[in-house]
Image (cartoon, rainbow, N blue to C red; front, side, top):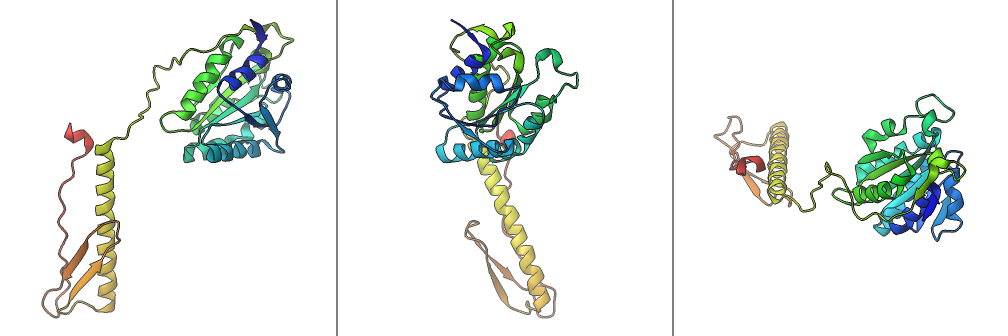
Length: 271
């Protein structure tokens, strides 16, 4: 079935179970808004693109499903960098759709043009620049797969105007439903590494133990405690132990008994 890129984008979002989009229309993304009129997807109009990103984050937090935001090109795309960074640091599944100038105008300093994929590379799990309307369903499917698997995070899809504009021949495509993902370099861990978790827990325990003992030693020395006394230091419950610090003969400096510490092999050394 022949449809245009804008219709393909909305249909692809429907296939991913999207019910709500937070967005602010603009020139480059405007052709995508017409198909929303015939879609069950609800569009929530915002007053600033940054708000759209944060609202999509809140939606993901509240529902456990990936949030979706859609904005136009140039300054609109740069306005969503903060919510993308926030979603990256907080592991929030987020799919950000940005408009872009036509393919022929990319790299020419055109009106409201910027290197969206380059700018957002450091604050997304992955980003896409779609160059063909035929790729839209597959790219959207892969974007949701990346955003929701492994450690969740934001994914950006940058879409040039000419491949979603129904008046442009480049937007014509044959509709299809993606059957899977083709991401050879993406192999997220879906089960925890027990050895690595145990190593980190024991490392943090000993680090906290050392800091607690050092702080107590400095405080007791400042208070003049330590002349023939036995001092018991209760450490945080999370460490799960009590250390007794016996003091040497009167008049001598405090001699602390170091708690026993067994060597913990790193996960790589256990293989």
